[in-house]
Length: 150
Image (cartoon, rainbow, N blue to C red):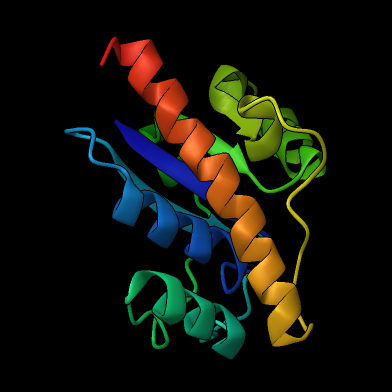
């Protein structure tokens, strides 16, 4: 199973979500990837995202290049989780054939609201976003286990 996390620029939220999921998920044959809907060419993970991931997961993503969302990525993914309801709507409108596998992350795990965008904020704002996503991703892993009967 391939899970695709999607945010705006793939330098803050979705790359953190990918790292959190892949570090915490021990379910066989499930892997997460991430991409951005509107990346800046040659951009890399934001310094605060990299710092928070290093602090919490011991992973160095500081040189990770932003990945732009493609139709091929959408078709290969089994589950597409966006950081906001709006992002889900855009993807569903543009790619109607995959709409059943596109969901806002928090809504998919029965939480309210969007994952806030820390872009340009302080390290504390990034830490808050990280903690919020970590909770949602732990709920996601629990949901996946239940769906698979594990």
